[in-house]
Image (cartoon, rainbow, N blue to C red; front, side):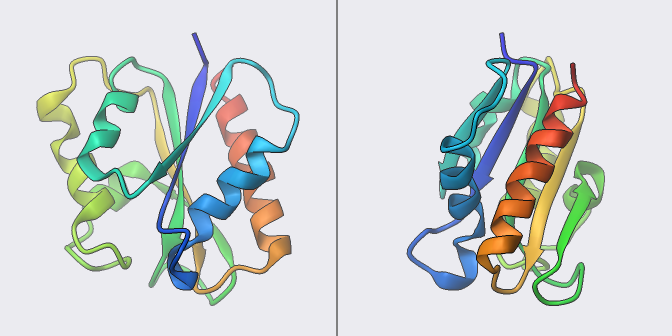
Length: 142
């Protein structure tokens, strides 16, 4: 069983929302320990719940809005994301809603949930940095 999962979410066909898929592509080409699973979550929404039901640590990767200066990578705790109002980081009720309903629908909650986000458009360097940071955070579960 993997120690952690990295769930990269977003729309690869929309420039301001392609951060997660770009990080996924980078992670897929990197060497990484077998106990860290990466998932291309795309626009799966509530279908992502199945990846959150076995107690593993989870690192989401997504574009954010209103958390950092443009182009900057930030790490946000899952509890903070769950408290966001609809639309506060560009996906209407997406990830905040998923994290709010999680305790009601999943018995074996993840040990920890964090989001690695990039504010605004991400350079190739920011994507590389986020991939390394996501992996580093996932490895903390070991």
